[in-house]
Length: 170
Ligand code: NI
Image 1: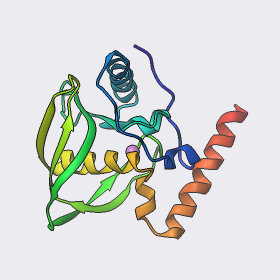
Image 2 (image 1 turned 60 degrees about the vertical axis):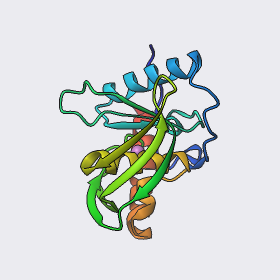
Image 3 (image 1 turned 45 degrees about the vertical axis):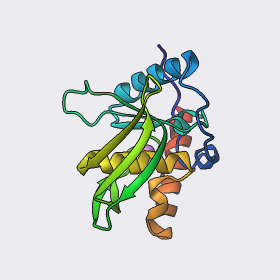
Image 4 (image 1 turned 180 degrees about the vertical axis):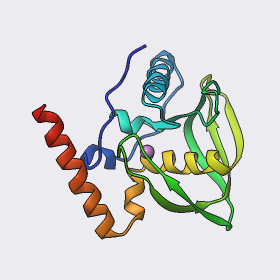
């Protein structure tokens, strides 16, 4: 396994639209293992392939307290989303240190392939529902800060670019 480099906002590659996974084969299983290692290492609860510069529809998630319930979603599709919405503070490994409220459906039903390539339907609510919707946005090139006001988004962009410059100077 290997740790993968996570793209940081406002990297334009984060706005790439991912293509479907053709088959859950050895290459994808290796990518899943690396993405899980990268997500756990960064203390994240979800990671989309887009964030590691692989533009295929693949997500890994673990919202468990014990960090021992990895989920793999390849080619996820939302089958149903509740009209009932909720605002939750979200963060993102591609936007480190930034947390802000985003409104999303409280409950969703999703179909995806799991890590073995089997089709599964998942009913999600709470943190899992938020996380799946957040990660699925990455697959269409959307970062959560795009839900915030232009003013906030520009502040975040400036902060990220400054952090990157300062980091490079060290
Ligand atoms: Ni994210």
